[in-house]
Image (cartoon, rainbow, N blue to C red):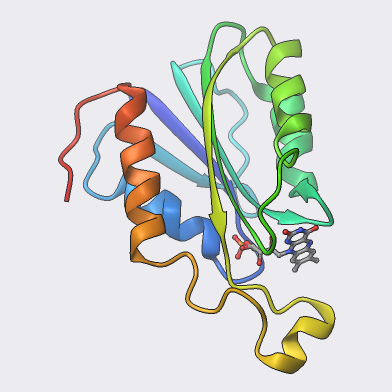
Length: 155
Ligand SMILES: Cc1cc2nc3c(=O)[nH]c(=O)nc-3n(C[C@H](O)[C@H](O)[C@H](O)COP(=O)(O)O)c2cc1C
């Protein structure tokens, strides 16, 4: 039985997936679910749930949002990861509300820039090329380690 599930929706460039993979690498206590491919029916075995997404029109990926609305279990500790074109406050508000409504504990969030070639941005090679970069990925690992859910090796 594993302790931590990370649910990821990362359809644009796999930017958010990079953060998740760095956190989960070599960790035998973490299950990662790409929600575009696999939606576990029951998350109740997990004490901790990570919710990870790119930002699309100001929101976390809709399929992920809809999934967590109906699958979080009371008492679970939840952390959030995201990448976006333009960092600003508020991207996590909807998820925070769902976590509270589900009577879970919101333990923290980490967000950083991600390469964005959506719409007109692609004409110029996009914004945030090269992001998340090594420092941002390390930032995600440090954030996770700081939550102290488990001991893990730090690169
Ligand atoms: C359809 C679409 C809408 C987007 N809307 C926003 C937005 O509202 N705000 C923002 O900061 N970035 C926006 N972006 C940029 C993405 O959040 C950014 O590229 C992110 O790193 C994508 O993550 P992913 O590669 O994990 O899917 C948008 C990208 C796409 C494709």
